[in-house]
Image (cartoon, rainbow, N blue to C red; front, top):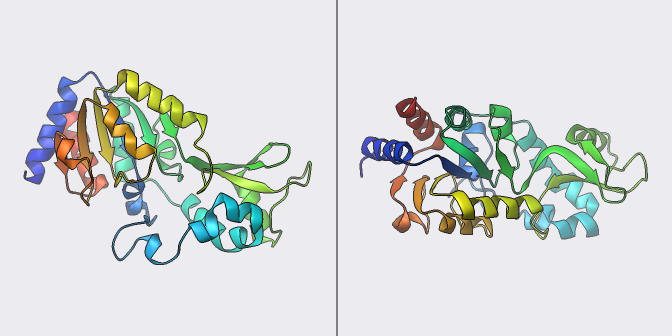
Length: 247
């Protein structure tokens, strides 16, 4: 199917359904300068194994490695800015068309772009937490301590180690994920997937809960054969054009 025809068909699907939900992945934020893990030639997996530096096990067993090597990626992600795709999804929510958004991304760019109903099921980089007393801190506090060579960063109340509020490799999924899954199971007639390869579980299982599916992704996914519409284009362009057709 030609690109323009696919965009028109996606817009028509949204028009005939009583609202839709969105699911976004790393491809949503590559246009904000955040590399994904798997894209050929640019994916992080080709340069460094994040499990070796950014997992929950590394945080607890070798916090020096976590904060001197793995933490740099989180700092860079926290400094990114929303791109047109983020603003387009916020616009679709403002129009009353998008009911909510599930994201695998930890960059917080959907929230910064104005999206209101967002399930950040892998956490975010706005805050960090104390592993001891559970107090929350602005993420900037962790960054400041690390930049001042206070590694690992420590809680000022109980002197326990601080960690970013993201789901690391080896962590359990948060309650928020199960809330999002229950909502989709009860209410999702149409799901728009943007920028996700749909291989990271358990989030990759969520499209099975939708009756109809739109996929916007540069690379093929295992769900393409089940989708009503598949759009091979960058999220920023496709979502901006989709918004313009629905205004």
